[in-house]
Length: 95
Image 1 (tube, rainbow, N blue to C red):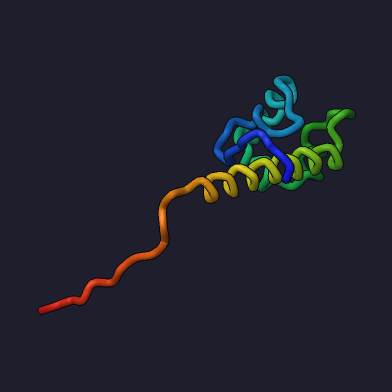
Image 2: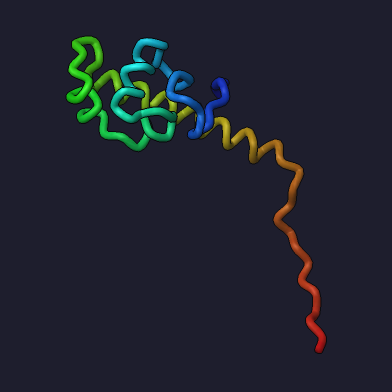
């Protein structure tokens, strides 16, 4: 199993995979401020709105894919480490 650095959807955009400080600033300018924003946005639209030669839809899709893997791995890790149980004992209700 591959190891990924933890990533939460609510994390700031600069923590997304492949996004540096300059790119994070550009993304914030168009309203992409969290990882969740990036994951839910259309890659083609981001590339079109940014109008940066180096930021193509394919590149945005790579950021989204890598970030999704990290988010998924984070939540799988959280679930695996949880000591909580889903077993509940029902009690009889008495009038």
